[in-house]
Length: 107
Image 1 (cartoon, rainbow, N blue to C red):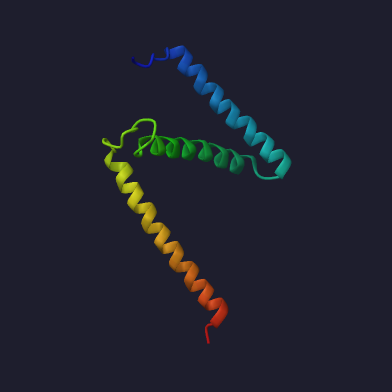
Image 2: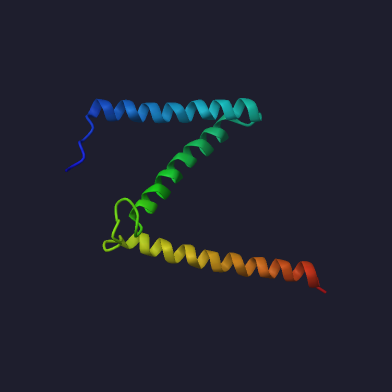
């Protein structure tokens, strides 16, 4: 069973709806938070793009929607996993350093 393709008009209207929603959220955020509109638009659009990338990554990882059996993990997903583990180690080391400086000072 294959997934049906969206027509050009439907895809265009869907994209228009998504980015229109981004624009409305940016306007509301700018109004209520009293922030610059362009900064709010950049944050909102960036959040939508990052959310899409994270959702795609999660679907491609073992056990995800696109890789339920874990046999065909794309190379970028494996590399991203190792990068995330490395960043976690660096974060833990910085936390240990910060706690050491807090409790023992930098005399």
